[in-house]
Image (cartoon, one colour):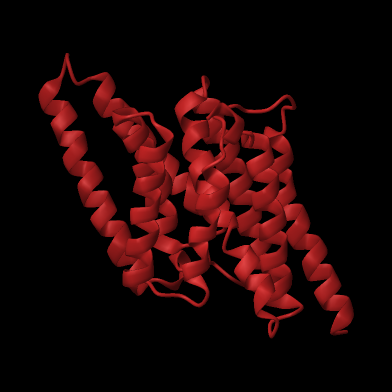
Length: 236
């Protein structure tokens, strides 16, 4: 069985990064060629799953939050300057997800000593999640990068991992979430998101030999700049 688990965290993120490039090239440069968008649907579920994994294993939680916040802020400013858009980048979406995750962690941490405060945090989490759902309905800024489900998927995967850290269980949870999204927020080519599960099925739970964490942080804005530059030159 171990022979089937041959994809590390790094390899899966590289696969997702390549798929993401296809997706963004398809959006801007080849909008009429469907295969670019179909391949692109693989990216988000893998990144969301790996993000939940990273939140689970990271030791310096404050540093993790601050790094994500800085990248989210920089990319958001870049979005606005380049496109006058307030739509959230993937960093912004994951930052909200991380805030939910850390609130959940806090509730677990104080559960024994301050039980009622822990329950209060659970109530706050539920209110926040409901609030995010309605914000997603009425504000256009959340709709890109999976919108509400983009924020919720890493959070739910993280909570599920706390309950039962077994790959097939987590993949069932992810499959359910993608299914709900397909029903509640149907988008073009969304059904192809399930292809990501094939790659995650072979995940071995290991990071990989190289430390590529910051590479993926930098890769996201860098590849967007390059694609937009190519788009600009082609349409000049």
